[in-house]
Length: 198
Image (cartoon, rainbow, N blue to C red):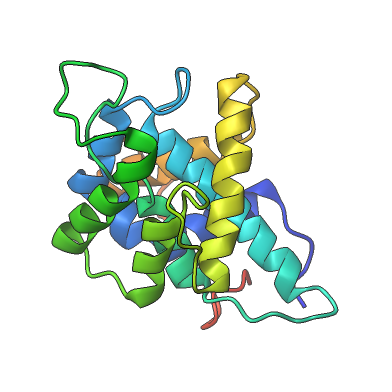
């Protein structure tokens, strides 16, 4: 059973499990597109990942001891809206009704740019259930589906739910690119093999 989860530990775990995606220029493109209100697609993806991870930790620590593939959960959540266009602008190329079509577009883009597995594809393709009609086949997909709806609601009503985690993820990105430095030396973060926080 994990020790008490803090925003700091959660941000660290999110970054460590998703850094292969977060550190890419491709994923950073999501900062250029608006999702809900004034929230960028990248900010939304981080929030959804945070809450999906919280739900996963709660399930693993519950009396049911549900085993979650946290690496796939984080990667799929980070890429669930990887559609790479601004659906608010009529001038942007449209592919039909965004709510129905963007999961397939995001999955196609994610397959092209990242090496994603079956669980990650399931998360991306089915996160809009019930609009997509087909529900997620894996528990990780259900967790992202629920987290997505919670975060979209909060973002629409301008409720801040993830600013600290977003700050930490962006700081780690800046550190990795040499944009900022802290102290003399950075120690590499470590997670246990199953993705638990040390």
